[in-house]
Length: 316
Length: 311
Image 1 (cartoon, rainbow over the protein chains, first blue to last red):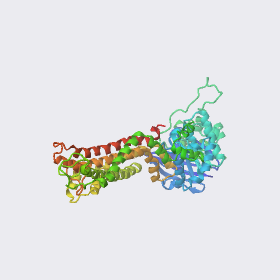
Image 2 (image 1 turned 90 degrees about the vertical axis):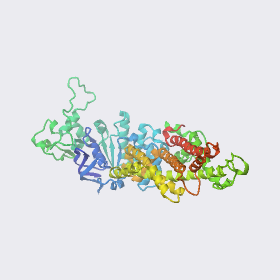
Image 3 (image 1 turned 30 degrees about the horizontal axis):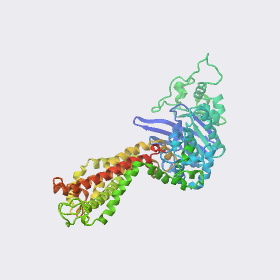
Image 4 (image 1 turned 180 degrees about the vertical axis):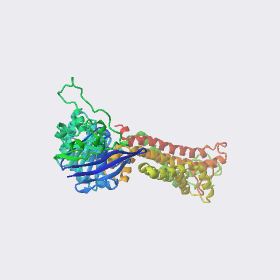
Protein backbone atom coordinates (compact mmCIF):
# COMPACT_ATOMS: atom_id res chain seq x y z
CA UNK A 1 0.00 0.00 0.00
CA UNK A 2 1.67 3.20 -0.99
CA UNK A 3 -0.98 5.53 0.41
CA UNK A 4 -3.30 5.09 3.36
CA UNK A 5 -5.79 7.80 4.24
CA UNK A 6 -7.61 7.25 7.51
CA UNK A 7 -10.68 9.29 8.47
CA UNK A 8 -9.26 12.52 7.06
CA UNK A 9 -11.38 15.56 7.87
CA UNK A 10 -10.66 18.97 6.42
CA UNK A 11 -12.98 21.94 6.89
CA UNK A 12 -12.88 25.42 5.39
CA UNK A 13 -12.99 28.30 7.81
CA UNK A 14 -15.58 30.95 7.04
CA UNK A 15 -17.16 33.68 9.13
CA UNK A 16 -20.43 31.76 9.11
CA UNK A 17 -18.78 28.61 10.44
CA UNK A 18 -16.95 25.57 9.12
CA UNK A 19 -17.65 24.23 5.67
CA UNK A 20 -17.43 20.46 5.91
CA UNK A 21 -15.67 19.96 2.59
CA UNK A 22 -14.02 16.67 3.40
CA UNK A 23 -15.70 14.75 6.18
CA UNK A 24 -13.97 11.52 7.02
CA UNK A 25 -12.23 10.00 4.02
CA UNK A 26 -10.79 6.50 4.44
CA UNK A 27 -9.23 4.69 1.52
CA UNK A 28 -5.98 3.18 0.36
CA UNK A 29 -3.99 3.24 -2.81
CA UNK A 30 -1.97 0.20 -3.89
CA UNK A 31 1.51 0.46 -5.43
CA UNK A 32 1.14 1.16 -9.11
CA UNK A 33 -2.53 1.98 -8.83
CA UNK A 34 -4.02 4.80 -10.85
CA UNK A 35 -7.06 5.97 -8.97
CA UNK A 36 -9.55 8.30 -10.53
CA UNK A 37 -11.27 10.65 -8.14
CA UNK A 38 -14.56 11.87 -9.54
CA UNK A 39 -17.59 13.76 -8.43
CA UNK A 40 -19.36 17.00 -9.16
CA UNK A 41 -18.00 20.44 -8.39
CA UNK A 42 -17.77 21.14 -4.67
CA UNK A 43 -17.82 17.50 -3.63
CA UNK A 44 -14.43 17.81 -1.97
CA UNK A 45 -12.23 16.06 -4.52
CA UNK A 46 -9.79 18.98 -4.91
CA UNK A 47 -9.83 19.49 -1.14
CA UNK A 48 -8.80 15.87 -0.73
CA UNK A 49 -6.02 16.28 -3.31
CA UNK A 50 -4.73 19.52 -1.83
CA UNK A 51 -4.87 18.29 1.74
CA UNK A 52 -2.38 15.57 0.84
CA UNK A 53 0.21 18.15 -0.20
CA UNK A 54 -0.56 21.63 1.04
CA UNK A 55 -3.22 23.19 3.20
CA UNK A 56 -4.05 26.69 2.09
CA UNK A 57 -4.81 29.41 4.61
CA UNK A 58 -8.54 28.71 4.71
CA UNK A 59 -8.28 24.97 5.19
CA UNK A 60 -8.40 23.59 8.70
CA UNK A 61 -7.16 20.16 9.64
CA UNK A 62 -9.77 18.52 11.84
CA UNK A 63 -8.59 14.96 12.14
CA UNK A 64 -7.32 11.84 10.45
CA UNK A 65 -4.05 10.41 9.25
CA UNK A 66 -2.22 10.16 5.94
CA UNK A 67 0.48 7.52 5.60
CA UNK A 68 2.69 7.02 2.59
CA UNK A 69 4.99 3.98 2.43
CA UNK A 70 4.70 3.55 6.19
CA UNK A 71 5.57 7.16 7.07
CA UNK A 72 2.88 9.42 8.43
CA UNK A 73 2.72 12.79 6.69
CA UNK A 74 2.42 15.84 8.95
CA UNK A 75 -0.24 17.28 6.65
CA UNK A 76 -1.34 19.80 9.28
CA UNK A 77 2.17 21.31 9.54
CA UNK A 78 2.91 23.43 6.46
CA UNK A 79 6.63 23.74 7.21
CA UNK A 80 7.24 20.12 8.15
CA UNK A 81 5.53 19.06 4.90
CA UNK A 82 8.24 20.78 2.85
CA UNK A 83 10.46 17.72 3.26
CA UNK A 84 7.78 15.51 1.67
CA UNK A 85 6.50 17.78 -1.08
CA UNK A 86 7.62 16.69 -4.55
CA UNK A 87 9.73 13.86 -3.07
CA UNK A 88 7.02 11.75 -1.51
CA UNK A 89 3.86 13.38 -2.71
CA UNK A 90 3.66 15.64 -5.70
CA UNK A 91 1.02 17.43 -7.70
CA UNK A 92 0.34 18.51 -11.24
CA UNK A 93 -1.85 21.50 -10.51
CA UNK A 94 -5.07 22.52 -12.19
CA UNK A 95 -3.38 25.65 -13.54
CA UNK A 96 -0.41 24.12 -15.38
CA UNK A 97 -0.55 26.98 -17.90
CA UNK A 98 0.34 29.57 -15.27
CA UNK A 99 2.39 27.43 -12.92
CA UNK A 100 5.71 28.68 -14.28
CA UNK A 101 7.19 31.99 -13.22
CA UNK A 102 7.02 34.25 -16.31
CA UNK A 103 10.26 36.06 -15.49
CA UNK A 104 12.46 33.01 -15.04
CA UNK A 105 13.85 30.51 -17.48
CA UNK A 106 12.51 27.01 -17.07
CA UNK A 107 15.98 25.51 -16.53
CA UNK A 108 16.81 27.98 -13.74
CA UNK A 109 13.51 27.26 -12.08
CA UNK A 110 14.15 23.51 -12.11
CA UNK A 111 17.70 24.00 -10.78
CA UNK A 112 16.32 25.97 -7.83
CA UNK A 113 13.78 23.30 -7.15
CA UNK A 114 16.41 20.57 -7.13
CA UNK A 115 18.70 22.60 -4.90
CA UNK A 116 15.83 23.21 -2.47
CA UNK A 117 15.62 19.44 -2.09
CA UNK A 118 19.36 19.07 -1.58
CA UNK A 119 20.18 17.71 -5.03
CA UNK A 120 22.83 18.65 -7.52
CA UNK A 121 21.16 20.16 -10.61
CA UNK A 122 24.11 19.29 -12.86
CA UNK A 123 23.91 15.59 -12.00
CA UNK A 124 20.19 15.53 -12.70
CA UNK A 125 20.48 17.24 -16.09
CA UNK A 126 20.81 14.10 -18.25
CA UNK A 127 17.79 12.49 -16.58
CA UNK A 128 15.82 15.72 -16.93
CA UNK A 129 16.67 15.85 -20.64
CA UNK A 130 15.69 12.26 -21.12
CA UNK A 131 12.31 12.87 -19.53
CA UNK A 132 11.66 16.00 -21.54
CA UNK A 133 12.35 14.05 -24.72
CA UNK A 134 10.07 11.33 -23.47
CA UNK A 135 7.11 13.71 -23.40
CA UNK A 136 8.11 15.10 -26.78
CA UNK A 137 9.84 18.28 -25.70
CA UNK A 138 13.15 19.55 -27.04
CA UNK A 139 15.56 19.90 -24.07
CA UNK A 140 16.19 23.40 -25.41
CA UNK A 141 13.02 24.47 -23.55
CA UNK A 142 15.22 24.66 -20.47
CA UNK A 143 16.71 27.85 -21.88
CA UNK A 144 13.36 29.41 -22.69
CA UNK A 145 10.94 31.58 -20.80
CA UNK A 146 7.47 30.10 -20.15
CA UNK A 147 5.85 32.61 -22.51
CA UNK A 148 7.82 31.07 -25.37
CA UNK A 149 5.99 27.77 -24.93
CA UNK A 150 2.53 26.78 -26.08
CA UNK A 151 -0.09 25.75 -23.53
CA UNK A 152 0.42 22.05 -24.20
CA UNK A 153 4.19 22.40 -23.92
CA UNK A 154 3.81 24.16 -20.58
CA UNK A 155 1.56 21.40 -19.34
CA UNK A 156 4.05 18.72 -20.33
CA UNK A 157 6.89 20.72 -18.75
CA UNK A 158 4.99 20.96 -15.48
CA UNK A 159 4.30 17.23 -15.61
CA UNK A 160 8.00 16.50 -16.01
CA UNK A 161 8.92 18.90 -13.18
CA UNK A 162 6.32 17.42 -10.85
CA UNK A 163 7.57 13.88 -11.34
CA UNK A 164 11.29 14.65 -11.47
CA UNK A 165 11.95 13.45 -7.91
CA UNK A 166 10.08 10.16 -8.46
CA UNK A 167 7.29 10.78 -5.96
CA UNK A 168 5.40 7.89 -4.40
CA UNK A 169 2.07 9.55 -5.00
CA UNK A 170 1.27 12.01 -7.76
CA UNK A 171 -1.93 14.01 -7.69
CA UNK A 172 -3.14 15.20 -11.09
CA UNK A 173 -5.78 17.83 -10.42
CA UNK A 174 -8.15 18.48 -13.36
CA UNK A 175 -5.25 18.47 -15.76
CA UNK A 176 -7.31 17.58 -18.78
CA UNK A 177 -10.17 20.00 -18.29
CA UNK A 178 -8.78 22.75 -20.55
CA UNK A 179 -7.61 20.51 -23.37
CA UNK A 180 -9.11 19.19 -26.57
CA UNK A 181 -9.91 15.50 -26.65
CA UNK A 182 -6.86 14.31 -28.55
CA UNK A 183 -4.53 16.23 -26.22
CA UNK A 184 -6.53 14.85 -23.30
CA UNK A 185 -5.79 11.38 -24.50
CA UNK A 186 -2.09 12.16 -24.93
CA UNK A 187 -1.88 13.62 -21.42
CA UNK A 188 -3.65 10.57 -20.01
CA UNK A 189 -1.28 8.23 -21.80
CA UNK A 190 1.69 10.24 -20.53
CA UNK A 191 0.49 9.74 -16.97
CA UNK A 192 0.16 6.00 -17.53
CA UNK A 193 3.63 6.03 -19.09
CA UNK A 194 5.07 7.72 -16.03
CA UNK A 195 3.56 5.02 -13.87
CA UNK A 196 4.80 2.20 -16.14
CA UNK A 197 8.34 3.59 -16.13
CA UNK A 198 8.32 3.95 -12.35
CA UNK A 199 8.62 7.75 -12.27
CA UNK A 200 5.66 7.72 -9.92
CA UNK A 201 4.49 4.81 -7.82
CA UNK A 202 0.79 5.58 -7.77
CA UNK A 203 -1.46 8.26 -9.10
CA UNK A 204 -4.61 10.05 -8.08
CA UNK A 205 -6.34 11.60 -11.07
CA UNK A 206 -8.90 14.18 -10.01
CA UNK A 207 -11.46 15.00 -12.67
CA UNK A 208 -15.16 15.23 -13.33
CA UNK A 209 -14.70 13.60 -16.69
CA UNK A 210 -15.49 9.90 -16.27
CA UNK A 211 -14.59 9.05 -19.85
CA UNK A 212 -10.92 9.97 -19.40
CA UNK A 213 -10.86 7.94 -16.17
CA UNK A 214 -12.32 4.96 -17.98
CA UNK A 215 -9.35 5.09 -20.36
CA UNK A 216 -6.52 5.46 -17.86
CA UNK A 217 -7.63 4.62 -14.32
CA UNK A 218 -7.42 1.25 -12.60
CA UNK A 219 -9.90 2.18 -9.90
CA UNK A 220 -12.39 5.00 -9.50
CA UNK A 221 -13.40 6.68 -6.27
CA UNK A 222 -16.67 8.60 -6.39
CA UNK A 223 -17.23 11.39 -3.90
CA UNK A 224 -20.41 13.18 -3.00
CA UNK A 225 -20.71 16.29 -0.80
CA UNK A 226 -17.58 15.67 1.23
CA UNK A 227 -18.18 11.94 1.74
CA UNK A 228 -16.78 8.98 -0.13
CA UNK A 229 -19.57 7.22 -1.98
CA UNK A 230 -18.02 4.29 -3.78
CA UNK A 231 -14.64 2.91 -4.78
CA UNK A 232 -14.17 0.03 -7.15
CA UNK A 233 -12.29 -1.00 -10.23
CA UNK A 234 -12.90 1.07 -13.28
CA UNK A 235 -14.98 -1.66 -14.97
CA UNK A 236 -17.17 -2.17 -11.94
CA UNK A 237 -17.93 1.50 -11.46
CA UNK A 238 -18.93 1.93 -15.08
CA UNK A 239 -20.83 -1.33 -15.60
CA UNK A 240 -22.17 -2.36 -12.20
CA UNK A 241 -22.15 0.49 -9.71
CA UNK A 242 -23.90 -0.16 -6.41
CA UNK A 243 -24.20 3.25 -4.76
CA UNK A 244 -27.37 5.06 -5.89
CA UNK A 245 -25.40 8.24 -6.60
CA UNK A 246 -22.90 6.41 -8.80
CA UNK A 247 -25.77 4.72 -10.62
CA UNK A 248 -27.44 8.05 -11.25
CA UNK A 249 -24.16 9.62 -12.31
CA UNK A 250 -23.32 6.85 -14.78
CA UNK A 251 -26.83 6.79 -16.21
CA UNK A 252 -26.72 10.50 -16.88
CA UNK A 253 -23.73 10.08 -19.21
CA UNK A 254 -24.55 9.95 -22.90
CA UNK A 255 -23.30 6.91 -24.77
CA UNK A 256 -21.95 6.81 -28.26
CA UNK A 257 -24.15 4.96 -30.76
CA UNK A 258 -27.31 5.08 -28.72
CA UNK A 259 -30.13 7.34 -29.82
CA UNK A 260 -32.04 9.18 -27.15
CA UNK A 261 -34.93 10.13 -29.39
CA UNK A 262 -37.54 8.20 -27.45
CA UNK A 263 -36.03 8.26 -24.01
CA UNK A 264 -34.72 11.50 -22.51
CA UNK A 265 -31.35 11.29 -20.82
CA UNK A 266 -32.14 11.68 -17.14
CA UNK A 267 -30.12 13.87 -14.84
CA UNK A 268 -30.18 13.68 -11.07
CA UNK A 269 -33.01 15.77 -9.68
CA UNK A 270 -32.18 18.22 -6.92
CA UNK A 271 -28.88 19.84 -6.00
CA UNK A 272 -26.07 18.80 -3.64
CA UNK A 273 -26.53 19.98 -0.04
CA UNK A 274 -24.72 23.04 1.29
CA UNK A 275 -21.72 21.98 3.30
CA UNK A 276 -21.91 24.77 5.88
CA UNK A 277 -24.65 22.89 7.73
CA UNK A 278 -24.61 19.49 6.03
CA UNK A 279 -27.56 17.17 6.59
CA UNK A 280 -27.10 14.38 9.09
CA UNK A 281 -26.40 10.87 7.86
CA UNK A 282 -25.98 10.06 4.20
CA UNK A 283 -25.63 13.33 2.35
CA UNK A 284 -27.35 11.96 -0.72
CA UNK A 285 -30.52 10.93 1.05
CA UNK A 286 -32.78 13.80 -0.02
CA UNK A 287 -32.04 13.09 -3.70
CA UNK A 288 -31.90 9.33 -3.37
CA UNK A 289 -34.72 7.16 -4.72
CA UNK A 290 -33.93 4.44 -2.17
CA UNK A 291 -33.75 6.64 0.91
CA UNK A 292 -35.18 5.30 4.13
CA UNK A 293 -35.21 6.36 7.78
CA UNK A 294 -31.90 4.60 8.31
CA UNK A 295 -30.19 7.06 5.97
CA UNK A 296 -30.27 9.73 8.68
CA UNK A 297 -27.31 7.89 10.14
CA UNK A 298 -23.99 8.08 8.31
CA UNK A 299 -23.44 4.83 6.39
CA UNK A 300 -20.00 3.20 6.82
CA UNK A 301 -17.67 2.91 3.80
CA UNK A 302 -17.42 -0.87 3.73
CA UNK A 303 -16.03 -3.49 1.38
CA UNK A 304 -18.97 -5.29 -0.20
CA UNK A 305 -16.96 -7.22 -2.72
CA UNK A 306 -13.26 -7.74 -3.38
CA UNK A 307 -11.88 -4.19 -3.68
CA UNK A 308 -15.37 -2.72 -3.97
CA UNK A 309 -16.24 -0.23 -1.24
CA UNK A 310 -19.67 1.37 -0.90
CA UNK A 311 -21.16 3.75 1.63
CA UNK A 312 -24.86 2.92 1.46
CA UNK A 313 -27.20 1.23 3.93
CA UNK A 314 -28.92 -0.61 1.04
CA UNK A 315 -25.71 -2.49 0.30
CA UNK A 316 -24.63 -3.49 3.80
CA UNK B 1 8.27 26.38 -33.21
CA UNK B 2 9.30 29.03 -30.77
CA UNK B 3 12.60 27.44 -29.86
CA UNK B 4 14.12 27.79 -33.29
CA UNK B 5 13.03 31.39 -33.59
CA UNK B 6 14.65 32.19 -30.31
CA UNK B 7 17.96 30.45 -30.81
CA UNK B 8 18.82 32.20 -34.04
CA UNK B 9 19.88 35.61 -32.88
CA UNK B 10 21.83 38.22 -34.79
CA UNK B 11 25.45 37.12 -34.50
CA UNK B 12 26.88 39.49 -31.96
CA UNK B 13 29.82 39.26 -29.65
CA UNK B 14 27.87 37.55 -26.90
CA UNK B 15 26.64 34.59 -28.92
CA UNK B 16 29.91 34.24 -30.83
CA UNK B 17 31.78 33.90 -27.56
CA UNK B 18 29.41 31.22 -26.34
CA UNK B 19 30.75 27.77 -27.30
CA UNK B 20 27.93 25.58 -28.59
CA UNK B 21 28.70 22.53 -26.47
CA UNK B 22 25.30 21.29 -25.37
CA UNK B 23 21.80 22.25 -26.51
CA UNK B 24 21.35 24.45 -23.40
CA UNK B 25 24.57 26.28 -23.99
CA UNK B 26 23.22 27.84 -27.17
CA UNK B 27 21.27 30.10 -24.87
CA UNK B 28 23.03 32.89 -23.13
CA UNK B 29 23.34 32.79 -19.40
CA UNK B 30 20.92 34.99 -17.47
CA UNK B 31 23.38 37.80 -16.82
CA UNK B 32 24.71 37.88 -20.36
CA UNK B 33 21.25 37.95 -21.79
CA UNK B 34 20.23 40.82 -19.52
CA UNK B 35 23.34 42.67 -20.60
CA UNK B 36 22.59 41.94 -24.24
CA UNK B 37 19.17 43.57 -23.96
CA UNK B 38 20.43 46.31 -21.68
CA UNK B 39 23.03 47.50 -24.18
CA UNK B 40 20.46 47.65 -26.97
CA UNK B 41 18.07 49.82 -24.98
CA UNK B 42 18.62 53.48 -25.85
CA UNK B 43 16.76 54.89 -22.86
CA UNK B 44 18.78 52.82 -20.49
CA UNK B 45 22.07 53.56 -22.19
CA UNK B 46 21.29 57.29 -22.25
CA UNK B 47 20.20 57.45 -18.61
CA UNK B 48 23.07 55.34 -17.47
CA UNK B 49 25.71 57.33 -19.39
CA UNK B 50 24.46 60.65 -18.03
CA UNK B 51 24.31 59.33 -14.48
CA UNK B 52 27.76 57.77 -14.76
CA UNK B 53 29.17 60.96 -16.27
CA UNK B 54 27.83 62.97 -13.35
CA UNK B 55 29.15 60.36 -10.92
CA UNK B 56 32.55 60.51 -12.57
CA UNK B 57 32.52 64.30 -12.34
CA UNK B 58 31.62 64.01 -8.66
CA UNK B 59 34.47 61.57 -8.08
CA UNK B 60 37.28 63.31 -9.92
CA UNK B 61 36.00 66.90 -9.81
CA UNK B 62 37.24 67.71 -6.30
CA UNK B 63 40.66 66.30 -7.27
CA UNK B 64 41.09 68.57 -10.27
CA UNK B 65 39.51 71.69 -8.77
CA UNK B 66 42.14 74.40 -8.38
CA UNK B 67 40.83 75.81 -5.11
CA UNK B 68 39.25 74.39 -1.93
CA UNK B 69 35.48 74.91 -2.04
CA UNK B 70 35.25 77.22 0.96
CA UNK B 71 38.37 79.33 0.34
CA UNK B 72 37.89 83.08 -0.21
CA UNK B 73 40.78 83.52 -2.61
CA UNK B 74 39.59 84.73 -5.96
CA UNK B 75 38.33 87.95 -7.38
CA UNK B 76 34.72 88.68 -6.44
CA UNK B 77 31.90 87.68 -8.77
CA UNK B 78 33.92 86.51 -11.74
CA UNK B 79 32.05 85.11 -14.70
CA UNK B 80 33.23 81.64 -15.86
CA UNK B 81 36.78 81.91 -17.17
CA UNK B 82 39.81 79.76 -17.83
CA UNK B 83 42.00 82.09 -15.83
CA UNK B 84 43.31 80.77 -12.50
CA UNK B 85 41.12 77.68 -12.90
CA UNK B 86 37.83 79.40 -12.02
CA UNK B 87 35.98 77.44 -14.74
CA UNK B 88 32.55 78.15 -13.29
CA UNK B 89 33.44 81.63 -12.06
CA UNK B 90 33.43 82.78 -8.47
CA UNK B 91 30.80 83.73 -5.92
CA UNK B 92 30.10 87.17 -4.58
CA UNK B 93 32.72 86.50 -1.93
CA UNK B 94 35.31 85.07 -4.29
CA UNK B 95 34.86 81.33 -3.74
CA UNK B 96 35.44 78.86 -6.56
CA UNK B 97 32.01 77.82 -7.93
CA UNK B 98 33.39 74.78 -9.78
CA UNK B 99 34.97 73.43 -6.64
CA UNK B 100 31.75 73.99 -4.68
CA UNK B 101 29.74 72.42 -7.47
CA UNK B 102 31.72 69.17 -7.63
CA UNK B 103 31.85 68.90 -3.83
CA UNK B 104 28.10 69.37 -3.73
CA UNK B 105 27.68 66.79 -6.48
CA UNK B 106 29.61 64.30 -4.38
CA UNK B 107 27.32 64.96 -1.43
CA UNK B 108 24.30 64.57 -3.70
CA UNK B 109 25.35 61.02 -4.58
CA UNK B 110 26.15 60.22 -0.94
CA UNK B 111 22.77 61.47 0.28
CA UNK B 112 20.91 59.79 -2.57
CA UNK B 113 22.64 56.42 -2.32
CA UNK B 114 22.66 56.25 1.47
CA UNK B 115 19.26 57.81 2.12
CA UNK B 116 17.63 56.00 -0.80
CA UNK B 117 19.44 52.77 0.07
CA UNK B 118 18.33 52.78 3.70
CA UNK B 119 14.75 53.63 2.76
CA UNK B 120 14.71 50.93 0.05
CA UNK B 121 16.11 48.30 2.42
CA UNK B 122 13.55 49.05 5.14
CA UNK B 123 10.76 49.30 2.59
CA UNK B 124 11.69 45.93 1.06
CA UNK B 125 11.97 44.12 4.39
CA UNK B 126 8.69 45.52 5.68
CA UNK B 127 6.82 45.23 2.37
CA UNK B 128 7.89 41.67 1.50
CA UNK B 129 7.36 40.37 5.02
CA UNK B 130 3.95 41.98 5.42
CA UNK B 131 2.78 40.92 1.97
CA UNK B 132 4.08 37.37 2.12
CA UNK B 133 3.21 36.51 5.71
CA UNK B 134 -0.10 38.35 5.91
CA UNK B 135 -2.27 38.02 9.00
CA UNK B 136 -1.07 39.40 12.30
CA UNK B 137 2.47 40.14 11.07
CA UNK B 138 0.95 42.22 8.28
CA UNK B 139 -1.34 44.04 10.70
CA UNK B 140 1.53 45.04 12.97
CA UNK B 141 3.89 46.06 10.17
CA UNK B 142 1.14 47.93 8.41
CA UNK B 143 0.35 49.83 11.60
CA UNK B 144 3.98 50.86 12.00
CA UNK B 145 4.11 51.90 8.34
CA UNK B 146 1.00 54.01 8.70
CA UNK B 147 2.30 55.67 11.85
CA UNK B 148 5.54 56.65 10.12
CA UNK B 149 3.56 57.70 7.06
CA UNK B 150 1.43 60.21 8.97
CA UNK B 151 4.34 61.70 10.92
CA UNK B 152 5.00 65.13 9.39
CA UNK B 153 8.39 64.01 8.15
CA UNK B 154 9.66 67.35 7.04
CA UNK B 155 8.79 69.03 10.34
CA UNK B 156 10.52 66.17 12.16
CA UNK B 157 13.61 66.58 10.00
CA UNK B 158 13.56 70.31 10.69
CA UNK B 159 13.44 69.71 14.44
CA UNK B 160 16.17 67.09 14.32
CA UNK B 161 18.39 69.18 12.06
CA UNK B 162 17.91 72.26 14.23
CA UNK B 163 18.53 70.29 17.42
CA UNK B 164 21.83 68.73 16.36
CA UNK B 165 24.88 70.91 16.96
CA UNK B 166 27.19 69.25 14.48
CA UNK B 167 25.49 68.05 11.34
CA UNK B 168 27.18 65.65 8.99
CA UNK B 169 26.07 64.52 5.57
CA UNK B 170 25.76 60.91 6.80
CA UNK B 171 23.47 61.90 9.67
CA UNK B 172 21.32 63.84 7.24
CA UNK B 173 21.16 60.86 4.86
CA UNK B 174 20.31 58.40 7.65
CA UNK B 175 17.47 60.57 8.92
CA UNK B 176 16.09 60.98 5.43
CA UNK B 177 16.33 57.22 4.89
CA UNK B 178 14.58 56.42 8.16
CA UNK B 179 11.62 58.65 7.39
CA UNK B 180 11.02 58.17 3.67
CA UNK B 181 10.41 54.40 3.43
CA UNK B 182 6.65 54.06 4.23
CA UNK B 183 5.25 54.56 0.73
CA UNK B 184 7.78 52.09 -0.66
CA UNK B 185 6.80 49.53 1.97
CA UNK B 186 3.13 50.01 1.20
CA UNK B 187 3.64 49.72 -2.54
CA UNK B 188 5.76 46.58 -2.19
CA UNK B 189 3.27 45.07 0.22
CA UNK B 190 0.48 45.57 -2.31
CA UNK B 191 2.59 44.12 -5.14
CA UNK B 192 3.61 41.16 -3.00
CA UNK B 193 -0.01 40.53 -2.06
CA UNK B 194 -1.03 40.31 -5.69
CA UNK B 195 1.93 38.09 -6.62
CA UNK B 196 1.53 35.73 -3.66
CA UNK B 197 -1.83 34.59 -4.94
CA UNK B 198 -0.42 33.79 -8.39
CA UNK B 199 -0.36 30.20 -9.47
CA UNK B 200 3.38 29.90 -9.84
CA UNK B 201 3.90 30.99 -6.23
CA UNK B 202 1.36 28.39 -5.15
CA UNK B 203 3.25 25.85 -7.25
CA UNK B 204 6.54 26.86 -5.62
CA UNK B 205 4.98 26.38 -2.20
CA UNK B 206 3.62 22.99 -3.19
CA UNK B 207 7.06 21.97 -4.41
CA UNK B 208 8.48 22.35 -0.93
CA UNK B 209 10.62 25.47 -1.24
CA UNK B 210 11.36 27.82 1.64
CA UNK B 211 9.76 31.23 2.14
CA UNK B 212 12.96 33.20 1.58
CA UNK B 213 13.64 31.39 -1.68
CA UNK B 214 10.11 32.00 -2.86
CA UNK B 215 10.33 35.71 -2.02
CA UNK B 216 13.66 36.30 -3.70
CA UNK B 217 13.47 33.87 -6.62
CA UNK B 218 9.78 33.85 -7.51
CA UNK B 219 8.26 37.09 -6.28
CA UNK B 220 11.08 39.64 -6.46
CA UNK B 221 12.06 38.94 -10.11
CA UNK B 222 8.51 39.79 -11.12
CA UNK B 223 8.97 43.28 -9.79
CA UNK B 224 12.67 43.86 -10.33
CA UNK B 225 11.99 46.90 -12.48
CA UNK B 226 9.57 48.06 -9.83
CA UNK B 227 12.22 47.61 -7.13
CA UNK B 228 14.68 49.58 -9.18
CA UNK B 229 12.12 52.28 -9.84
CA UNK B 230 11.46 52.42 -6.12
CA UNK B 231 15.15 52.90 -5.44
CA UNK B 232 15.40 55.59 -8.10
CA UNK B 233 12.41 57.45 -6.69
CA UNK B 234 13.77 57.15 -3.15
CA UNK B 235 17.19 58.29 -4.40
CA UNK B 236 15.61 61.27 -6.13
CA UNK B 237 13.42 61.94 -3.10
CA UNK B 238 16.39 61.88 -0.73
CA UNK B 239 18.29 64.28 -3.01
CA UNK B 240 15.35 66.67 -3.13
CA UNK B 241 14.68 66.54 0.64
CA UNK B 242 18.38 67.14 1.31
CA UNK B 243 18.41 70.06 -1.13
CA UNK B 244 15.35 71.53 0.59
CA UNK B 245 16.87 71.19 4.06
CA UNK B 246 20.13 72.68 2.85
CA UNK B 247 18.30 75.47 1.07
CA UNK B 248 16.67 76.65 4.29
CA UNK B 249 20.02 76.58 6.05
CA UNK B 250 19.92 73.22 7.83
CA UNK B 251 22.56 71.54 5.71
CA UNK B 252 25.74 69.81 6.89
CA UNK B 253 28.33 71.99 8.55
CA UNK B 254 31.91 72.31 7.36
CA UNK B 255 31.22 71.47 3.73
CA UNK B 256 29.00 72.66 0.92
CA UNK B 257 26.15 70.97 -0.88
CA UNK B 258 24.23 71.95 -3.99
CA UNK B 259 21.29 73.08 -1.84
CA UNK B 260 23.56 75.26 0.25
CA UNK B 261 25.03 76.81 -2.90
CA UNK B 262 21.54 77.79 -3.96
CA UNK B 263 20.79 79.10 -0.48
CA UNK B 264 23.91 81.26 -0.43
CA UNK B 265 23.28 82.55 -3.93
CA UNK B 266 19.75 83.55 -3.02
CA UNK B 267 20.94 85.22 0.18
CA UNK B 268 23.50 87.16 -1.85
CA UNK B 269 20.87 88.20 -4.40
CA UNK B 270 22.73 86.39 -7.17
CA UNK B 271 19.64 86.48 -9.37
CA UNK B 272 19.36 90.24 -9.18
CA UNK B 273 23.11 90.65 -9.73
CA UNK B 274 22.95 88.31 -12.76
CA UNK B 275 25.48 85.87 -11.24
CA UNK B 276 23.80 82.99 -13.10
CA UNK B 277 26.85 80.74 -12.93
CA UNK B 278 26.38 80.53 -9.18
CA UNK B 279 22.86 79.04 -9.02
CA UNK B 280 22.28 77.45 -12.43
CA UNK B 281 24.84 74.60 -12.17
CA UNK B 282 23.56 73.19 -8.82
CA UNK B 283 19.91 73.36 -9.89
CA UNK B 284 20.69 71.87 -13.28
CA UNK B 285 22.78 69.08 -11.74
CA UNK B 286 19.97 67.99 -9.43
CA UNK B 287 17.55 68.00 -12.36
CA UNK B 288 19.90 66.11 -14.67
CA UNK B 289 20.78 63.40 -12.15
CA UNK B 290 17.19 62.75 -11.03
CA UNK B 291 15.88 63.04 -14.61
CA UNK B 292 18.39 60.63 -16.11
CA UNK B 293 17.64 58.12 -13.36
CA UNK B 294 13.96 58.30 -14.32
CA UNK B 295 14.75 57.74 -18.00
CA UNK B 296 16.96 54.83 -17.01
CA UNK B 297 14.08 53.31 -15.08
CA UNK B 298 11.80 53.30 -18.10
CA UNK B 299 14.51 51.50 -20.06
CA UNK B 300 15.08 48.99 -17.28
CA UNK B 301 11.45 48.01 -17.31
CA UNK B 302 11.89 46.87 -20.90
CA UNK B 303 15.04 44.94 -20.03
CA UNK B 304 13.70 43.13 -16.99
CA UNK B 305 10.32 42.21 -18.43
CA UNK B 306 10.78 39.61 -21.19
CA UNK B 307 7.36 40.51 -22.59
CA UNK B 308 8.42 44.10 -23.34
CA UNK B 309 11.67 43.12 -25.01
CA UNK B 310 12.13 43.81 -28.67
CA UNK B 311 14.13 41.18 -30.47
